[in-house]
Amino acid sequence: DISEGDLLIGLASSGVHSNGFSLVRKVLEQAGLSYSAPAPFGRQGQSVGEVLLTPTNIYSRPLLPVLRSGAVKAYAHITGGGLLENIPRVLPRELAVELDASRWTIPPVFSWLHTEGRVSEEEMSRTFNCGVGAVLVVAPVDAQRVLRQLQVHLDAWIVGSVVHKQPGAPAVMVRNLTQSLLNVGGASGEEPEVSTSGCHGNGITLHKRMRVGVLISGTGTNLQALMEQAKRPSSSAQIVVVISNRPGVLGLKKASLAGIQTRVVDHKLYGSRAEFDGTIDRVLEEFGVELVCLAGFMRILTGTFVRKWRGKLLNIHPSLLPSFKGVNAQKQALQAGVRVTGCTVHFVAEEVDAGAIIVQEAVPVMVGDTEESLSDRIREAEHRAFPAALELVSSGSVLLGDDGNICWKSQNKS
Image (cartoon, rainbow, N blue to C red; front, side):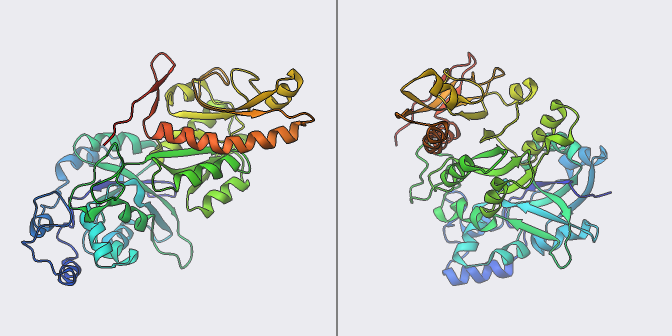
C-alpha cells in the first residue's frame, strides 16, 4: 500500500540507542576520553558514559493508538545499520525515500562523533540513527493528524517522503546531514538552546532557524536575494522549499542548484482557486514551513489561505505603499509624476497590497526614466529590502499584532 508521495514521520531517539558502539569506542580512544570523563556533548555535568548509556526510547505506548487507527502503512525501527539499512526493509523495490536532516533535532553526541572522529556522512547514516529512532510511513492526508497525535507524547517530525526509485539509485537519500550535524554545536559541552544573542559561550551559533517556504512564478531574482541572505551563518531563516505555479521557470533551477527542495503546483491543473491554494498549503505543511515569502508569485491567494497564514505571509510590492497598489505600479508612479517611489515588504492581508508594512526603501524617479529603467532600480532595492524583512520576521523582531499593526520586539543584549 506504500506509494510515491507518502510521507515519513520520524520519532526522536534519545541518543545512540546502544548501536554503533564499536565506532563510538574508536572515536573515544582517538580523543583520549574515558567513560568517566566529563562529556564534551550532552548536558553539563554528565560523564561520557552517562550520555552514551541514556536509556533507549521505547515507543510502544504512544504508538499503539496510532497503529490501531490504521493510518500507518509501515514502521521501521532504526537500529544497527542506521537510516540507510533499516528503512529499505519496509519499502517495495520500486520505491525509495528522501530524508531531510534539517527537519529533525539531532542530539549533540552525533555532532561530536562526526566532527571528532571525522566520520563521513554515509558512515554516520549507515551506523547511527542520527536522532531518528523510528520511522512511520503515512499517506499525506493522514500525516498532520498522526503527527499531532504523536507529539502529545514525544518529539516527532515529518522527515521526508517516498519517491520513485531510479535504476541504480540508493533506497535512502539523506539530504543536509553534514550541515545539520555541524549546526548542532554538539562539542560545546551543553545542550543547544535558543539564545537571544544567537551565540554560545564558545562562539558557535546555536539559534534555531525559522523554516521558510518561497512561492515564485518566474526567474526568481528576489528568491536569489533571499537564498543568499539565508546562507549567512547569522541568519534566522532557513529556506526549506520553493514552490512555483509554473513548471520549468528559472527560479526552480536556482533553488535546485542551491540544494533547496522544489515543487511545482500548476494552477492550470486545478478547477478552483481553493483547490489550488489547498495543494500549496499541503506542500507547506509537508515541509514544516513556518513563514511564507511571495517572491514574484503571480497568483492572488484565497481569503481562507491568507487567514490561515496570517502573520506568517510576506509579500513585496514595487511601490511605497499605500501609493500605487495593484499591477503596473512603476507605470502608475511615472504617470503621477512623483519624484520618489520604491518598494515595500508587508504582511499579506485579504485586501490586495494592504497589509502591515515591515520594510520600505525609497527609489528616486529620475528625469527621463522609462518604466523599464525605473523597474530596474526598484528591483535592486527589493533585493535589499526583502532579505531585511525576512530577518526581522524570522528573528522575532517583528510580529503582526492582533490589531493588524506591526509589533516591534526589543532585542535583549547579552
